Length: 313
Image (tube, rainbow, N blue to C red):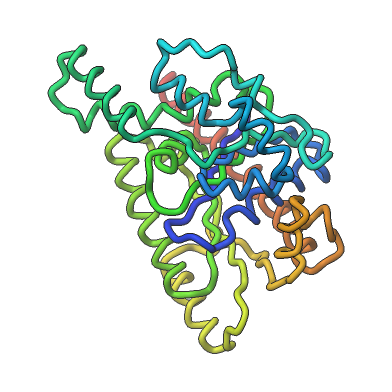
């Protein structure tokens, strides 16, 4: 079964999409992994980082975007013929093993979701509407991806900033989450807010801390321009006080104009300029990410073995 990784921060403009698409591309191209990128953001930045606008316009006209799958989850009686296998775009950016579940500028209708959940609550005689809503958001993205999870080594979800339904559902579906951040106060606030909300989600849904679910894979610093050394160190120090060294990636993504230029070519920077400083850092970050994932896997297997032995006793 593939591991699901959510890239998320409450604040926008911190490099979530840059991290998501380049990490996915490196995993596929340099490590032979089967990777699916899922665009959960209505800005469709991840989608347009992997395909040109005219290609997106064509698939959107054919309704081959994530919005169709979400509509089917909200209105199952509609019986739309398209499946997730029909909608996934294969070998995007001409990289073997790299697939994309395209996003859309209109992913879901909040009124339709509320109406459906209200009807469900009435049908089930459920008085607690919040409970019905929580259960729906817990399984929405997980159920959408369920038919293809076994086809991939990693599924990387590029989440929208803020805390909307799809971001929460993407987080709930994930085994791990990545926190991209810039060394700026507001970006750090975004991290702190997210950590509190994830702790709340674990509490609401009784998630065992030993389970391979909602684990912080790490914080990735993506550099900004115009930072003074002393100011930069103050921000980094604040993060070091709140998190352990193992929760912060050693690799940092430098300020690199090639990252911005890559957006204009609708390709990840690790493909357009692989020898640039930004690309080299992203390639190195991917290696560090794989090492962390392997370490988590070993700890998880050891924990399972320990629990099984205790049950036998």
